[in-house]
Image (cartoon, rainbow, N blue to C red; front, side, top):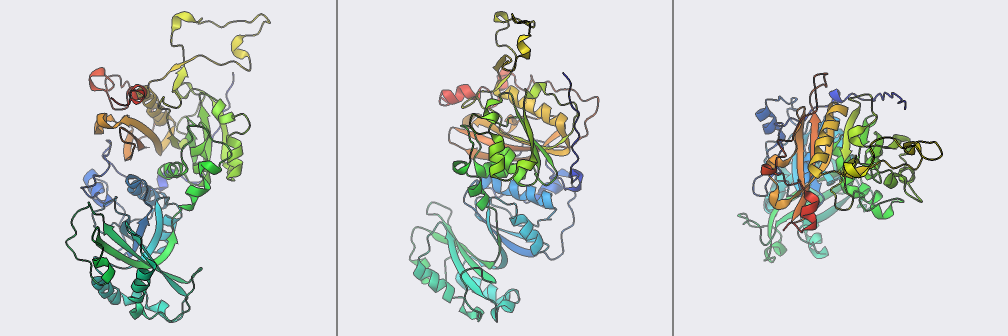
Length: 509
C-alpha cells in the first residue's frame, strides 16, 4: 500500500498569535466563592511578560448568556489570543458566575472582533456608568456626559431595559426610562435599527445569595421586592451582539444528519473557539463521528479533516457528513474523512495540524475501540486466503478485528498523537469524563511538551465532563519518544476517568 504525502500550507502562522501562559499543570475552575484571578496576575506568576496595554483603554460591558458559566473566561481569553485584542481586566477580580463583566479594549473595532466570535456573550456595551443604586448611577452618568452628549441632539435612539434574575414589568420599565430624561435625547425614537441603543440592565442577588450591604435606591418598586436585592445597575450604549444566533443555526434538530453522540451546537462552537479555528488553519478530529466539531471549525474558515475507527457514522445510510457540510455552506473547507485507528494512523508527516479538537468515546453510548483482538487464542494471526484465491483482508467489506479501549488508555493515546501531530503552539481540545466524587486536580492527563490552557467543567451531578485545552510548547525532535504513563495509571492511584463506563453503568455507587 502506498501513501500520498500531503503538505497543507496555512494562511497564518500560529506563532503570530500570543500564547496563553499557564503553569503547565491542570488548572482548576474558579470557585463560586473565590473570584477568578485576572490574566495579568497569572502571567506575572508564570514569569511571562504580557504585551503592554494602552494607557487609557475604552471601557466596555460584556453581558453573558446564562449558560456554561465556567466556559466564559476560557472563551474570552482564546478570542483575545486569536485576534491579539489585548484585553485589560482593569485590575478587577473576575467572578465568572456573574453575567456582567467590565473590560478595557483599545477601540470599538477590537470590541466588535470579540463580538464576532464569542458564543457566550449576548451583548457588548460601551460603558457609561455602573453603580449599586440608581442615585449613584445617575450621578456617575452625568459626570460622564461626554460619552453620550454628542448623540442627544439628532440621533435616532431607543432605550432597552432588562435584568438578571428578575422580570421587569412594562410599567416599571417606563419609570426607569423616564428617570433618564435628564440626558435630553431629542432625536426620533426608532425601535428598529436606531443609531443609538441605550441599554440599562439590572443585576440582582438571589434570595439565597450573599447579603447586599448596599440598599437599592432611586426606583420605588425595588424596595417592594422582598425576596431579592439589587446588586448593580449597568448602563451603556449597545455596540454589538455576540454570536448566540449560531447556536440556533447549528441546532441538532435542524441538521440533516446526526447520530446519538452528536455534540450539541453551542459546545461545538465553544470547542472551535478554544482550538483557535481560523481561516487557513488545519483542524483534525480523530473521533469525528457525525462531524459536529468539524462543521463548527469549518464555519470559522478552518480546513478540517475527520477520521474514526468506525466509518459508518461518517458515511451514514441516507445522509453523511458531506450532506451536513453542504447544509452549512462549508463543503469547501471539509477536506475529507478517513477510516483508521488513531494509534496506527497513516500520516507520514508530523506537526501538521494547527488544532486537534475532539470528543473521545466514553464507552457509554458508543464504546471506544482500537485495532487488535481481545482474545488472541480464538483467532488466527496470519493472513487468510479465500477459496477464490483472494486475501480476506483485501475484500472491500473486510472489517479488521478490534478490541475495547479503556478510557485512560484512550486519553494517553490522544495526548501522544497530539504531541506528534500538532504544530508548535498548536492546541488540543478534548472532553474528559470523570466521576464527580472521584475527580481531583491531578486526574487531568499530562504529557511532556503539552501544557494546560483551560479546564472547564460541565456538571451532570454524579458525573461531569471537563473541556480540557492544551497547547504544544516545544518543537518535536528525533529524541522524543512515546511516554510510558503506566505508573501514573497504577491501580493504587486511579484517576476519576478510569473505568468510567463501569462507574456510569453502576450509577457511580
